[in-house]
Length: 138
Image (tube, rainbow, N blue to C red):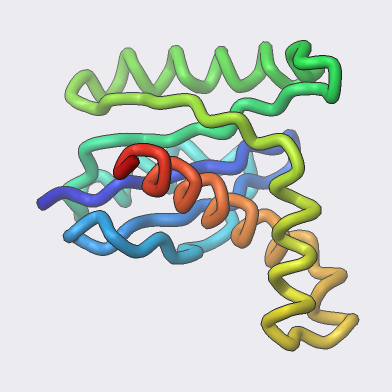
């Protein structure tokens, strides 16, 4: 089976998570500077069989698009034109940063480790992917 990759897209950096080949477990993969994201994905897709890309959809509490949404749409358009085989799915990512922070506390990470934004982004991408897997299997 192919893997599923998820991205918590940000203006500075993007958290990335991936499933195992059985598409059961979501694991944090890495954090990549946004300016290097296309290069990273090109290399990753070259070396790994990925069938779906899950991209977080940030919304406000009033269910409106976040200010970063136009940049995400631009990124998705680039992905679609470059990787024609790849299915792209959007997943609501409201509260994932808060959930990521709480997961790091629950996991026993020290305060200075929780302050690392890269770790928060990677955990957020993992939560986005786990949410997708959970709802897909319902």
